[in-house]
Length: 141
Image (cartoon, rainbow, N blue to C red; front, side, top):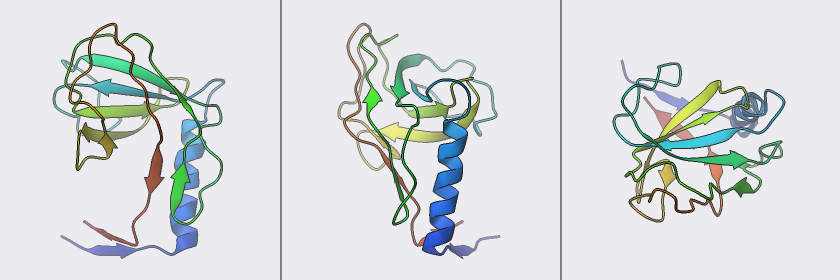
C-alpha cells in the first residue's frame, strides 16, 4: 500500500529532535561509519561481510535543536586514517554505545550521504565539511 505523509513543521522538527536525542545517548559522541557492500535491511540488522572504511565522530551533542524542518550538525571530527580502501555505499549513524540510530545510502551524487570522492584509501584522511538532515514537506511511501 502506498501513501503520502505530510508533516507540519512542528512535527518534522520533533522527529528530527528525537533522532538527535537518540544520537546523543550514552556518555560520548555519536559516530558515522562508512561501509561498502549491500546496505542491511535496517539499523537493527547486523553488519556481515561489509567492510568498514572509516569512522567519523560527531560533536557531543551532535546538533542544536531542529529548525525549519532541518537538523544542522555541529562539526564532525575526521578519521585521520581510513581503515580500508573501499567504495562506500552506505553509512551507519550510532550513539556512543554503538547502538544504531539510522542507516543511509552513500555515493557521490543522489544519495543521503553525498561523498566528494568515490573511494576511500586505507590510511588516508576522511572528513565531512557539513551535514544536515531535512524532513521534506511530502513523504511518499
